[in-house]
Image (tube, rainbow, N blue to C red; front, side, top):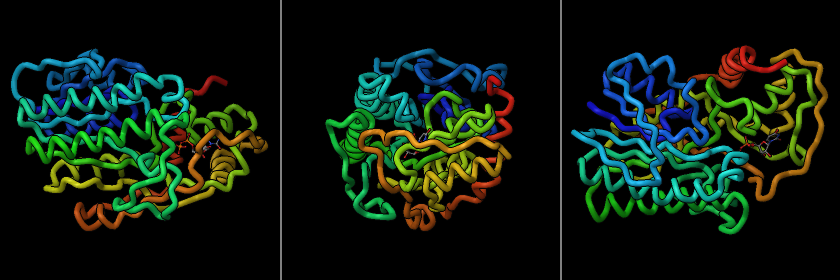
Length: 311
Ligand code: UDP
């Protein structure tokens, strides 16, 4: 089994590389390191079944030999990252998806698209089921990511319907764990970094907005199951355990034993008010649900950040 993964040096991508190698795959990791890091895959680079190609997948890619699976995970994915790289984000979701689907068609590969809960935008239905079409502001600052992923889903379904490519789409909800970047701007690394440094924890808005956090190990299990499933409609992957951001900040204080105060900052534009996956489809189709409690996952993540934070 030979598997190509774009964004393989990123947070989720690197966990997938590791898991696929452990499952006996040959892994070809493609990354241009715009937000990925070599450090994430350093421990894999000695294995002869692991190969790295430094390449921007928004440009066409030629590969020699067979490719059994293509996993398209390349994209800036945190709000801070895609606001910093708006055009590369639009390009990797559109051109990058087109290039990888073209390769899947040529090589007759199975194809899995990493999509996102952002396709639901600021949702008017709660929790979010896959049948909901979403509420996205196309010209807002988050539109570069949301619309790129919505386009990517449309392109993926078109290749499935028109060219019979064996495609799958996972809609990934907020995920955390080891190898997140401390400076990616997301709420987990931000608050943990602040707590570890004894700085105030920054809560945006009044903190009443909600998110539902999934540990990366659980997510990877769901992705592998979806890759092996005969199912082509999108599947939500995430943890339905929902929390307000203010309560989440309090949890981080308790977990770290930090005496930091919580301060409030302006809410970013188009920040979704609520987010929680309905995972009935993943339960029924994949027999999957998250197994790691937030407390346990956050503890592991904290250990990872503790070694890396500049004090
Ligand atoms: N957030 C926060 N403080 C931070 C970073 C983020 O209160 O230091 C909030 C953000 O406004 C959002 C939620 O936490 O409501 C999750 O933000 P994140 O950037 O992790 O990802 P999102 O779920 O918005 O894509």
